[in-house]
Length: 164
Image (cartoon, rainbow, N blue to C red; front, side, top):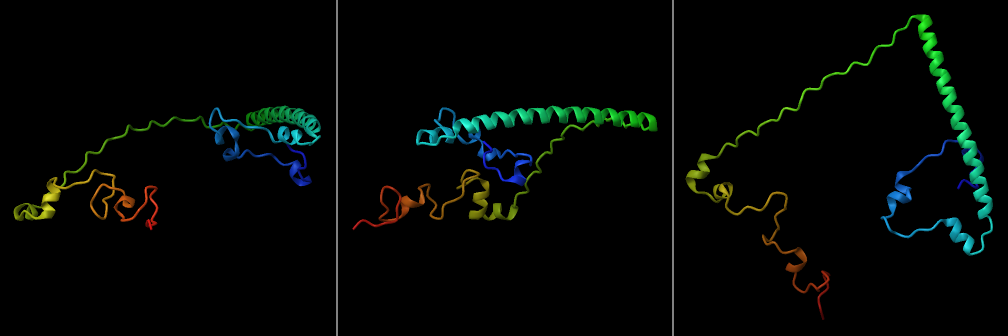
């Protein structure tokens, strides 16, 4: 719907903003309505005019596109004939073979022999003592409970208010 587009912008190319598309914004099965239909139900009387103007705009846009295709075809032919007259040969596209990916083997980790001999706690952790699964940050208190459950007086919804 392009009713009311100011003068310099009505001749410019329209753009599509993907983040505003209904197809991308709404989940399948959700209900939606057109603003024109909603406005018409509350008394707006220009829906027919807008539909007529939109159909007119679409026919003009289709004619413009066909003209654009014809001009592009004529331009391509003109460039081709000019190249032949001038003796210009276009370089053929050459496909370059891409080497296959080579997998790198991980380097073996060196163990600290001093920690192993002393029996240090750090050495025990390295051997596989108290380890958390990779990807999960360690809690400050060391437990697997959420932070809200550790606080005294936290209510059931996770708020920080104490009961009076």
